[in-house]
Image (cartoon, rainbow, N blue to C red):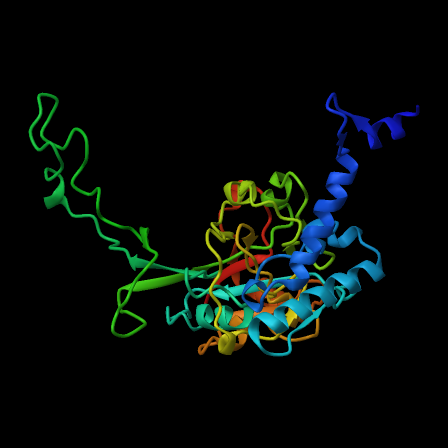
Length: 344
């Protein structure tokens, strides 16, 4: 008897036929598929078997991509009770997207954060935000001789000038290195504060891409680091590798009310993410691939944010690089961000 036949019919000592592994898996697949078809609308949020088994999006054929998108559109439309589209607009040729932010103009209003949440279908509970605005106090530029002996411990056998900490230890020079991640003033901007928004820096040498064990995150042709949410395994290695605290992990099932859901989505952009995957800023990929500004750029009331093609000398962002004093955040990590900060 051949090996296949032996697997199909393997009699036990009691004369009963033992079911083969192949038949067992086949029956399990049929049963699971039937359960998916007959599941009530309340279970529409669950990822279907077809989605769970699909390959990496960039390695799929055009026909496979269309089927995957059709599945998502059907599921999202049912889940949110509105017609949802999932685009697959390709990256435009000859474009390298870059961003510049004027920190001397930023007033800390966080309208960019709100616009990003509305545009990109982030969870409201638990709240997930891709942009974090840091508040830093303006420093005191003067050192004072009367504080020389005010360190601690104030008295010590080795001297009376603060052997562990000098009297000027808490005097901030320039901008304070101490930042507030959550601030709630009555009015902004505050007289004694600078504001420093941080989001994905879209690095040219992204540490997160190197860290991903399954290549669920990668750099697209326009320089934007994207994530295939269906391929992400939620290991959070990218989050550990990122120096900018730019990635968020869905610990729980995201809560996104139907009335607040943006139905115009992109597969690699703002489509709803499931529990257990990473997500982050994509420069509003669903918008910029169609020639529009990111939502945060449009929302800024003081024009502190500039966006454009780094390959175009006439673009706004290139003019900033040519005429302003520009720096990159955490340059020492050699990730070469395409997100630039400058001051007037």
